[in-house]
Amino acid sequence: MQDNPSADDLLIEKLRTRAYDPAWRFDEAPVPADWVVHRYGKEHVDLARERSLGFDSNGMIYFPAGSAEAVDYYQKAARDSLSTGHCSRGGGC
Image (tube, rainbow, N blue to C red; front, side, top):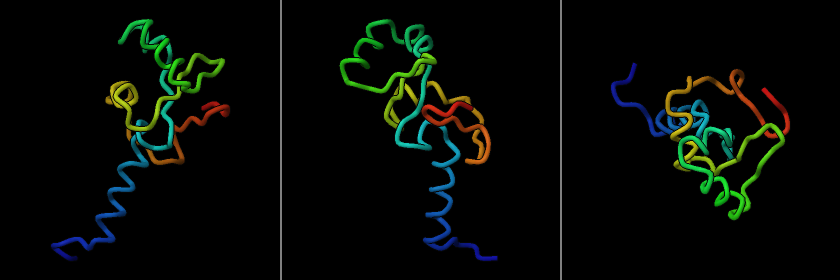
C-alpha cells in the first residue's frame, strides 16, 4: 500500500465526500421552509421567493448546493452513499 495517495485517489475521495454530503450532493439541496422560518425568520423565506428559488408542495425550499442554509440544515445529517437517504425534487424519499 502506498504512503502517498495518487492525485486520482485524492480526487475520488473528494468526490465521494461531496456525494455523501446532502448539502452538496446535487445542484440544489431541499430544506424545509418551517425550519428556515424557525432558524432565520419568515423574511428569509420571502427572500428565497424573491431569489426565485424552487419551492414544492411538501414545504421544501431548494437552496443552491453548499448554501449557508443547506450546510446549516444538514450539518448533523448522516453521510450516506447515493443509494440510500436521498430525496430528489418531485420524487420523494
